[in-house]
Image 1: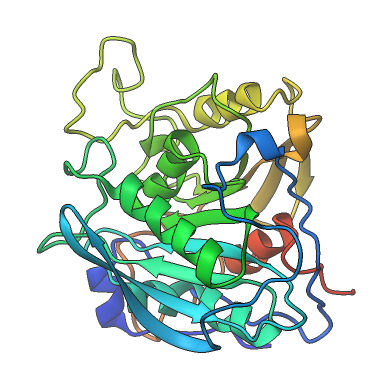
Image 2: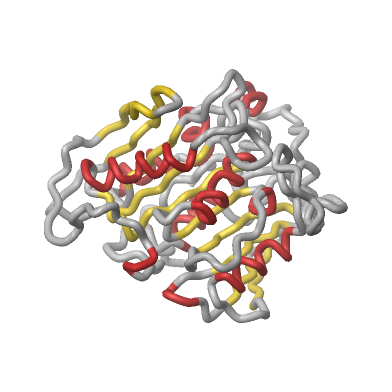
Length: 337
């Protein structure tokens, strides 16, 4: 099974969004129930009836949809599989990086393509605002992106047969920051999977448990795993700048939030990547970190075009982040050996 490629021009637009999702293996099967279970009281379903068969108002295929918001019209790309037997599907919200677009993010992850092909999930890829589109995460720009994203999720629960208890977010670089941010600030998400950016967002202990599956490279020079001096201290209060704290301390704070064990277990995934998991989390959640030795500010599993030397660093080649996210969140079974 070959890895996907994407144009060098896309790399220039998406800082470090340089990965490509691999197709789901032919031996894989989609699952009806996800392994991530969130207590009903922890997820705001916005009074949408979610029991019994569902009738979607949207047909299969890829479309761009618009939501009217106080800040103006907001858009997102929607990738719908065929919905059979009235069964609700999980939703993946996939955030592009600064300067990106939904189309470029789909070219990176292929979540929409794979979810539609397997029928395993629905994918929504929202568009940020601004001439250099950026998400309203503290440290970026002002705005109500949380309100936009929650309105989008509620719309898809009502119209697209989304299961409100299986809504997940991912993204790379500043899109990773946005995925971590919704995990802290929104009640709509069961799990988040930031790629190269979980430590761009302040810790949010004390909130309801939300699963975390994070990815990071040890040689990420844009979001250093050791953080930046002073930025993770109590005196740092400049919300105009991204928080850049220590990676392990940030992930460990998610483990405390979710009531997990204080010590992580480790598993080697190959020559570059180690999987850290803090077991025993509350409400069926999980906290996992994939740390790739020697990798930069990149999406694991990327393939650069021949002759391209990326400024963002090397790519982990022993895992594919798109496949791993789908497996960790129970959206697709792991392939048979």
